[in-house]
Length: 444
Image (tube, rainbow, N blue to C red; front, side):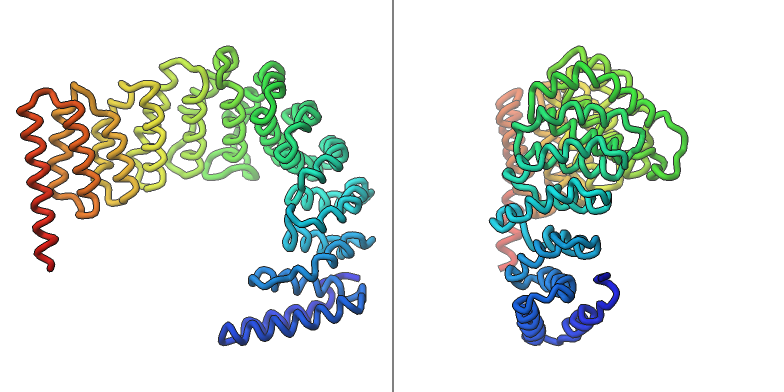
């Protein structure tokens, strides 16, 4: 029976709940519906089971307890029909989580559905397993999932790769079982399968050192070729986002290269050219391009790289500081704080722009920029930077004066070239603090 053929009762319940004027009325409607559902569950009528579960899912999303309907999920999953299984698996993912003991009862049904002749049933089982898989279920069902990575249908391969990612997170000891299958996914032409395969390889590299060495030796050149092909590909409307070909795949590939190149000079040398190409060819006038550039900068900073490429990455961050978007300026400041440990001189070139960010209207950008300025101060520029900060202290917001005064005092005390200059700067700060305190007392 199709569960959507006569869903009037569910619609009526939703209308009744939405028509409630108060929380008490809503609780009364939900209480009555739950009582009716309990009565139907006790009758064990299979014809109304899918409707009851659909109503329970809606009640659960409203925040009411629905634990009494958990066994209904298992009964629907064990049903032979696809519509019932679909509702059952949806309820399983929504009403249960991996901490529920009752979840172990569904392992056998999942195993049967993973070997089902209907690929849509297999897809349902993979989706559920990828969302709620526990360590025990991972150990029991890993062989089935590993086999499905080589399935003929790309949608099943994609779901199996995502499910494998959860399995290796839950049980790292199983990582070695998925290495060869994950490597085979890197040769996929279907972008949906490829992006999940790249994610699986990334997780394996983080979890297992042997897997990381395997991908370094066998797959580095293939990953670089894939990234180069995507970067240089012609316009493809099905993958284009704001002029960037599949930025999501771009980002996943860059993250995989980052973990492969970190700590390995040979692998880092192989990827230098493609990283420079991505950094120079990607447009930065849209969010998709900025996301790719940011991941490219992260990768350049992480791998064993030459200083010239790091200078290029820092210049990209400098351009980010001039962006109108507060989020982009904030992440650029965060990255520059990390980059200063690699190349202080390259970051110093953007000192003027960073100082402008200290005067930004956004409080979080302002605070992060002030922290970066503190890191940029040295014996050669302390006089100039302190003057800029004290000048701004006089006109800054009252909420920001405290942090700004504290940072100025720290800079002056640490880098003071002479005692007279030190006293002069501290007096200026104290005068400004006194003026602030006088203004506050004047309010009372």
